Length: 127
Image (tube, rainbow, N blue to C red; front, side):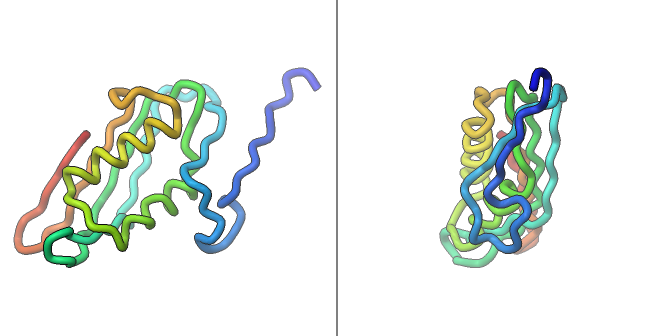
């Protein structure tokens, strides 16, 4: 059928829980020029103290052919909750993973993490 949009099959979307996580899933861009995704549910572990670090994450990108499916992003972010990362390294990792998933160079993806105050210090890192 000419002109009909291609149906995208998602692994995680439409299923409860995280057992269906298959990585960052994408779909063809409908023609948007900028996407911004914000989450306050990112948690990682301090690699020195093993204390939890809580983050507000903003992921922005200027899509080419692909966009990130949001449930897969939520599951991707929740995967860091038991891993040890410094904020500055985590922001680069997320930026690089998102860029790879949507087939963009890293300079077309911007990630900002705001680590909520622990010990009286808030950290903001952008890559």
